Length: 279
Image (cartoon, rainbow, N blue to C red; front, side, top):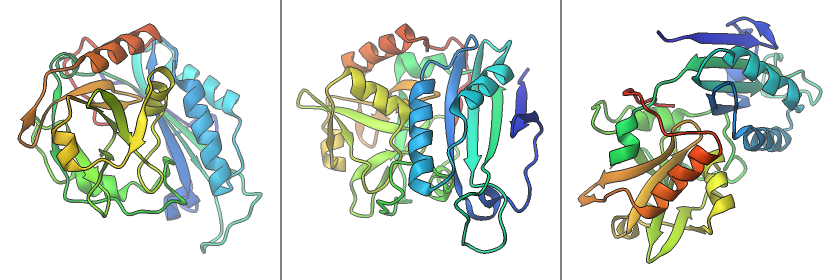
């Protein structure tokens, strides 16, 4: 049975004001993290990205220790869970102008989680999305609340055999999947697309960069299909080997397998269930 628990401003609730700027303008940020046995192994990276995003958007920084405690409270008793932390600029008057001293809204949702073990063992099928990412360096890297590009990209397919879609920038370079970052092993070198112009600087992406030498590149489709190994990274779903893309197929490679082992070592073991989560 699926379980979901929510709070708003650290009080059990599931509603925010219609005047909240997160609702009216998408004026805010969010983090989605996996909880295992009441722990959030990648919390420090989530907190750092959230704090940096708040600074870039001039949102008053929330109390990260209090948010962490709230995530742990709502996840209590759940063996495997996904938590979403949403921080908005808060309630504001009509109009785009905002006050620098606005009080942020903090909403936390924790739900039980079951992931598909076969995706990690065998790899996944991905497709190319027609929807492209617009370049906006002022917002690039952040996990802000405007996800319309990803929503429309994810609407392009509805077949269970396809797990993800790859998104390109306006010049045709591969940037990411709809809800994951992308890595490839090209001529023995581990690479990942740059996100300085668009895309999200993922928490799992940062963890990979901390334990492996990674080059940030502009990645063409032609280079991708010639890669020796391709995999996706997600804070919730972990390390997902790509088995099929376009006309190319792969077997899960040694880099992905080593990173899956690293994920288990930091407290994020491979799943044993049979249902994937599109988060």
